[in-house]
Length: 173
Length: 396
Image (cartoon, rainbow over all chains, first blue to last red; front, side, top):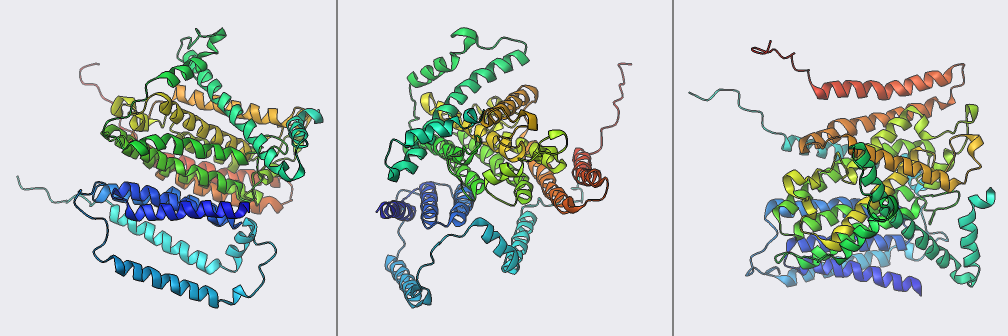
């Protein structure tokens, strides 16, 4: 019973944050509500005994992505939307349709999965040590590939942000 | 002495014994919270008065000495003043966020204390990935600073918040990187395992603390520098640089909300200090084998107090940095050094199997050289060439 209450609490926080992030008018409020939804999702992971995923979710999404979103909002168009503008898209039914299709596809995939037939494993938790060993042995190639990709992205960002070298020719006097 | 060492755990289990077995874990958890919150709350009060008195002495004045004996009741007077002050919210402020920001800063910081081992078997929860938890709960503070700065609708507040976030993001990289060699050598993310790995003794009964190895000493220094910056303390306190931007993101805060921000900042510093003690200074272990009879929580407290004093000392000594110096220092000096320190830790790990005569000395020299030479070269390269000697035209 306490498990269900905790799940309902976390789910409510996540859903409320996500809905608020889509419907609020002020973009900064939206970004902060999205951060709340990320935190709720992390709590759900923790409730599933996925310690590593939960803490990583908090570190990466609340600590970095939310800040990134907030900075992007402030640096691009400003946080204030004109009072006349509507936050809803011109064709909301399109979004509903896409959402329903994605949901149906996910449900179909989960129901068709053979994992459902199997009994749940007795200890459904992954110790961090085991995750590390797996990452360093079986999944070393994906890990290295992601590392390379991120380094390339980082270098690209630095190149874009580099100040243009000053023009060498002296202006005509 | 064993009884004194375990006294808090004994009392805790005694109290938990009064309750039915099904709620005992809950009672123990509540007891741990009921110990941590007052102890570190009082620690905050004590640190404010000690800091003011020590700063005063270092600047050749007395510091507060009017309220109570030696001015010891000054924090109570300050707290009362803060509580009774008028809470001013600017007319154009975003009221909800303005109210929430101090809470979002202060509440998660308390969580970080849950995983710190304060003594033998004295950590509130023993998490498998404790250090990940520690940094994860700390990640909310950047959002809180942004909320405070943006919701105040004040240019100084926003500039201060932007400075603070840039600083916190920059220094989080060396902060986390400097802890990685410790985790690598201990082979665990659990703080209890890390303390246990430092619990053996070597020649002459000297403990095997991480700070007594070349990479550990460099890691401790890097960690302390990054922790100073993370908690916005002098010489990295330019988010609150009063000469340029009034009080940064705190400009529009008064009364108890202001006090909450200060509480959150100091608690963050305490948590970082506790982590530094745990990772590098052997946690609750004694430095020598013949000093083990002193209770473990006293050792933790002593190391904790010494590091806090060091932070106060640094504040009294160094002038404030400029923003470009601050960011350059993080990205061009601390981050490369902490990466190199990772290599020094790895060399220490792989040379641990050597057992020819004088292997210890070679190991030491190798690991120390890996840290010391890059430090010297990087420092020289970043400083640039020295200016030529000054020539005086008319003053000879």
